[in-house]
Image (cartoon, rainbow, N blue to C red; front, side, top):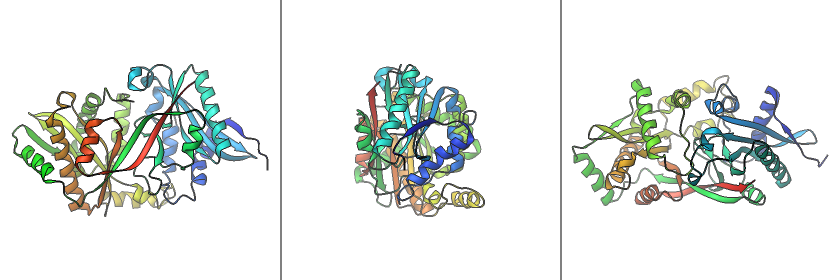
Length: 384
């Protein structure tokens, strides 16, 4: 068998299918890898289907050895990310690679080198990676937590990748954590007093997201998010097309009791979303919805039994950040969602994240509710 590694650009449906299938083959023996839906992968990577491509440029590459696909990588940059302040992580000249899979260290080195060359050709001077594809999707490389399956919309990677990536001259730019929570346990007396105090306050009103007015409530959450996260490292704003697209895609995951909006003095002030972990079901499907898996998934989503829940997004408007009110709203929403998940779906665990390592407010909240870091992801940086 030839030892030569050829890096070839993906072109056409056949190549795209081979690019997607590569991940299934290379991870087939990992019991904790959850096969994503192939239809979702096609949609994610296809301009005209995913609105990310309206403001981004991307090239996919495959590694071949002896005619067999032995790795893959995406190289891309986001015009909206390029427009962000450099001190917030992105900024002019910052490109990315992601969708990374490799059979061995030699394949890894060849793929990363080709992605870097492509980014240089596009005028990029720095790379943040892996990011697949947007910062809002699956950022970072898993470096801790390989011993259990990931929850929805979080990545799972071969443990060897860390050494292979760092061996190509990459330094850690940011660490991202997910926190595991036993939802069957109540919180401390102090947290319970904070929640009770909020319930007595005439200023505070909590309500669940209304699926019959989902577009309205999604817009409220996005408005809070853009305000709350605008100064965060890695922030890139959503476009109107992405809001519409995401709202349609995520609506089936919305269980009203697990998604909250907090109002202060009659105005939206905070939100928290918690989604049932569909990876529990997807693991059975091998990436395929047809012929009958789509019906099984829809049936499961109607009333997920013993579901775990992930909190992927939350935010408090900037004028209340760094105040006691911010943490009070967070504790109230977490407690209400915890009760709902446990009482209505017999949930045993939840997960919060990802959380930036230096987001002191969120780290303090995670510590206060006695949650523990169960996975760590790293975003790496390198000057091109």
